[in-house]
Each structure stands twice: as structure tokens, then as C-alpha cells.
Length: 312
Image 1 (cartoon, rainbow, N blue to C red):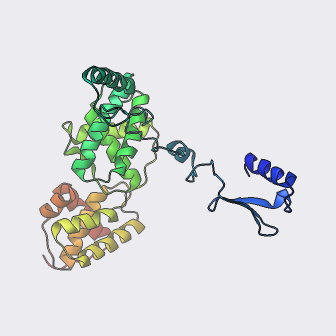
Image 2: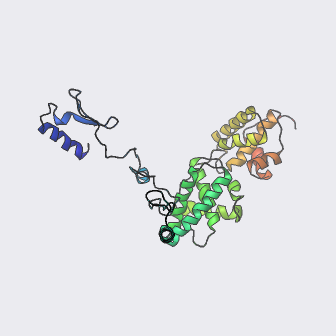
Image 3: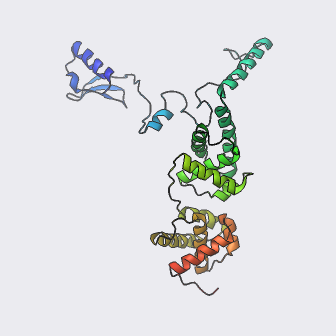
């Protein structure tokens, strides 16, 4: 219990309170000091000076505060500095020309303070690029903060020096998607980057290695729904494709394989079984993989799972 609680208990006891101090507890939800022995409310409407939310990890404690916005990895200064607003005085009136010039000078100075170092300037540029990519890919905005945390760690370790900011930003987004289990392939992200897939993949491997990130195994079943919807197939095909992938996982056939390619192959098999045929080219395009990948994974699944298909 907090130190101020004990001080309060002793003070009430000195004032002649009938309840022993060791039985007085503080109810955070009601803001009341209550005697557990008699049920008496010793004091109500007490001010709680503690945090307004709970934090279970050190990271949550640094991201949360009693007042103001949580710390943001998107901003170079983590959102600690304030931003000067419109040029008006305390009463809401517009400033005179001389005062406005002075305010503009202070605003420029404040902008420089936000990006005082080369790393902060780089982080500011990366924030714009990551925001652009996340919006273009239709990803949830929460990915921006996750990707910026990864990018900031890379910048502080000097990993972005001499490399394309765009490619490192794309790699950070891909890593954030993998950590959150969001089904986005490297090919889909690389489409919006000039450097191409090869450069983004190289930057991704660098981030994983140097930042010692442990990536969860990608679940190919997460890709099924998106591909099925893009192809206009029925829910029966989706269900059957997921069953095939679960069988493949139990036999250890999914380890080390591209999850999108496995999902595409399972959908191709399910579509053949349920007579909702689509070509390998159509499925490959919807999954964002090559026809060769679909063909190879298809043959492997049919052979190892001993799936008998109708005559094509």
C-alpha cells in the first residue's frame, strides 16, 4: 500500500477514529477510504494521484502517463514537445504583424529542436514514408507505431546508414505485420517500393539479424480468406482449404514454406474438389505469388497428403 495511505490512517487514528489503522484500505474505483472491520467509510471523494491506467510491462509504463498523450515512436521527440498552434493571443484575437513574425520565427526554431540530430531527421522522414506505405496497403494505423519502433531501433544502431530509407521502412512494416500476424506478403509490400522485392528482403533479413528479433511462424490459414474473397469462391472452398492446411501442418509440410504459396495451393486443390475451378495463374495473381510456387506446393500437398482429385 502507498506511503500516503499509511500517513492518512495514522492521522485518522490520532483524530479519534474508532477504526484501527491496519484495517483501513483505499478503494481506487470509488476514491474512498474504508474500514474492513466495520464497513465504515472513513473518507470519500479522495484524490488519487496514481496513474489512470494499469501497466503490466516496462514498455507499457514508458508508453503511458497520467496526463497527455502516450509516447509515440512516430514523432522524433516521442511527442514530448508541444506544437505551436495558430497565431492568436490568449483571447483568440489574431496577432499583429510584428508579433506574428516573431511567432513564425519561434515556430521554425521549435521545428529545428524537434529534429536536432541526424537520427531524428531520418526518423522524421521514415515516419512519412511508413505512413504512406501503410495507407497504400490498407493496413491498420496501429502498424505505423510498431514499424516506427523497429525503424527507430535500426536507426539508433546505424543500420539505415548507406541503405535506401524506403526499403528499410518497407522491411520494418513487413516485420511489424509478421509480429502481429497480419497476412501481408513481402511481394505485396515491395510493389510500392522502387528498390523492389530483393532489396526489401535484404533489409528485412538485416533487421531480424541485427535487432535479434524472434519472428513467429507465419500461419498460412490466415491468407485463405483474403485469396478466396479475391477469387469470388464459396465459403465451402475456404473451409476445405483450411482443412488441407491443418493436415499439412500436422505432417510438418508447412515449415520453411511461403505461407501465401501454401494457401494458394490449398485453395487450388479445394476448388478442384468442389468443382469451382480456377486456373493456377488466377490463384497465383490473387495470392501475390508465382505460378511455379503454386504448382510446386500443389504437387507436394497432393502427394504427401494422398489427395485424390477428380479428372481434370
